[in-house]
Length: 222
Image (cartoon, rainbow, N blue to C red; front, side):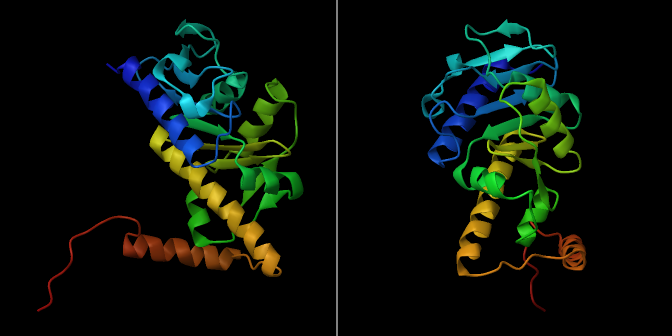
């Protein structure tokens, strides 16, 4: 059986880390993780200064959004979190107003693959159309945009990343922000080059062949 107290502490810790990295600013943004035993959502409360998020600032809601634990109302984006989780295969959701990701979503319709590491997010990252925060329209738009990938940008708003675990969703948020910053910085120097489909396929094949991203013992020379 899962420890809800530990999950609340995990959400608070992730919020503080994202704030320290500059991805969550003031009360802007929210973080959640699914309780695997109950399907309930453990999520930051509304109005919390995320850099100071503590266990008591994290609420628990059932799949219909009804409060089942905690003293505070959940984030105003609870519908977005529930919608993304309901789509399946998601263990955690991170929504940020990260500066670079937000800037890209204010200008572009997508983030093309600017670096091969971006393939870890699913490749090109579309920008979900604008809708007012906290609305079913926004939740539906972001959920659709996330199909087949673990990151989405939000027009004139921010970004959402997902993961099988909260640690993974946080890492995806950091990677997305890095890719967006890379696009912005490279655009200052000239017209950025993007990886086409052939280059992306070659990266995937090389990663599989080399077991990329995992540690393994060094082989002794004969």
